[in-house]
Structures are given as structure tokens and as C-alpha cells.
Length: 210
Image (cartoon, rainbow, N blue to C red; front, side, top):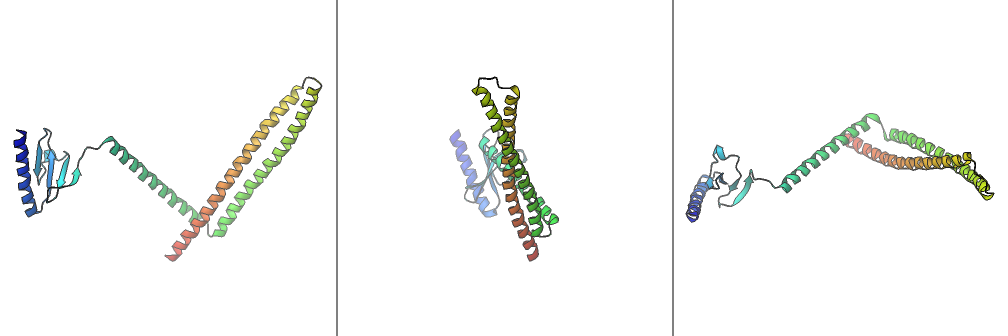
């Protein structure tokens, strides 16, 4: 029985290919809900959502339609969509940044002046923290000497001395952290300064050429 249906399908395909070559119409192959294989130049409305294959004049598959996708394919498509959205947002962010550059500054000298002030403010704040750090380190060293004096004589170290040492160490850690953060901010600001200046030159030269 299977051989009979197989031969019948091959015969139907041969006849359809002959008609297809003459009429140059589309040819499709699909499997219905019962597992039957069909060939036709028209897909019945009841089979429109079934997976099917488009065939060329020689009966070779050219395109798959409504094919059930694997989990890997679905995941890949989702990742591609996410990447497309990410690229779109980056582009929108870039356009907004370009608009801000052109509306905020009238020349590269304006950019130089703005970033020079910002960098100077950071440097001033960093230098202030460095002075406080050195002063606190000196206070810590002097206070630790007092503690050693008491310990060397086997006296009880006054609570105020122990509290001061603890407080100075905390202050030193805070100043060191502030200085580290300020240096990181300065590095980031320098990078943005170079980017904005380069981008502004590009945008203004591009608009002038137009």
C-alpha cells in the first residue's frame, strides 16, 4: 500500500512539474494532518498554516514556509531581536548626544573651556583630600607613638588614645577611597572630553560640507 501511494505521489509530482514548466506557476509540497504528502500549484486555505516547501521547475526545494522552529532557532531569533533593539537604542542615544553637542557648544574652544573647569574642580578636590590624608596620617603616627609609650611602661592605654587611632584609620581609608574615585572620574572625564571634541569636529565639518 505504501509503495502504491509513493508511486502515485511521484506520478502526481511529475505531472505537476510538467504543468509548472509550461505555466511557470509556483509549486508546493506539504504534509497534511494525517501524514499524507501533497503536491500542487495552489495551497488550499485549510492547509495554509501547514509547513510546506516551495519547489522549482526541477522539483528541488527552494524555500521552507511555516516550518516548525527548534528551541535553538527560537533562542537565536530572540537574541538577534535583542541585539537589534540594543543597536537601535545605542543609535538613538548617539543621535541625542550629537544634538546636545551642537546645541550646547558653538566651537571647540567652548568644549575646551568647559572641560578645563571640570577637570580643575576635580583636581582641586583631589588635592584637598590628599592634604587631609597626609594630616591624618601624621596624627595617627603621633597617636600610635603615645600608645607605644604606655605599652612600653605596661600602663593601661587611655581609651581616648585607642578611640583616636580607630577614628584616624577610618578617616584614612575614606580619604584614600575618595582620591581613588576622583582619579577614576578624571580619567573618565578626559576620555569624554576627547570624544566630544572629536565628535563635534566631525559633525560640524560634515554639516559644512553639506
